[in-house]
Image (cartoon, rainbow, N blue to C red; front, side, top):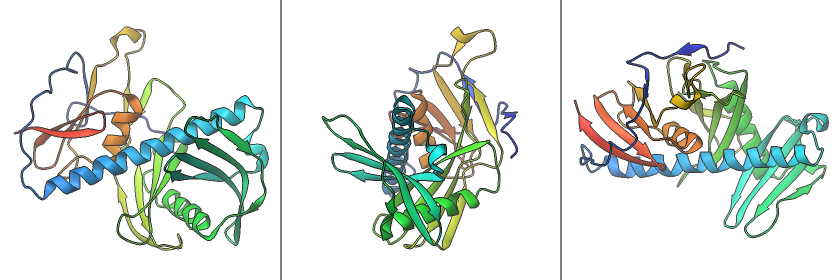
Length: 267
């Protein structure tokens, strides 16, 4: 795989220092029709983030208890959200019959629970894992040596939104490029549509080498081909905990903080 090595310049990815408090005023969206889209983007971006967080916690918990997913021949995972938490299932087997190798359950006001169990996935679980595999296969601009995933039911429609998320173990890097979304059929076997969220492998360093105290208060991305920021921008904002400025194709400047999107100005 080709690693993400391109550090974006002024018009692609800009490091903004000392600007974290400058985005308090916003202007109305261009049209009322954008409001539902922005609310959808915020919701999906947060759901991706929550799934990613549960998976990270599950892997850390397994390692802390001496359980290695690789030794169980786990090929990946699916995360099922519940009202009181989530269930992360590590999957093994083959497309003819996916199986669980380990399940980690998260319930509010209770400690996470590790269950080592070898059993067939349910029909829904198998569909989710199939969708996950399709998302990984749909990445045409590989920007990382590792990819995380999230699979979310489509609101009001059958099928899934499956995300391949470029990942790095370097805590000083932020991967903006390389993320992909696959829209998949209900059984997880048919790719209906795909979207790559960037044309390049954009990478940002949190701080300059030798100057860790210079970490930015906010980051900026421009110029993306979309009219509004995407769910990946919301995900990155929540993941790294810093405000994110985005310039869209129609020369508008947006501000994302706490998973919420605001329009700041038009150029």
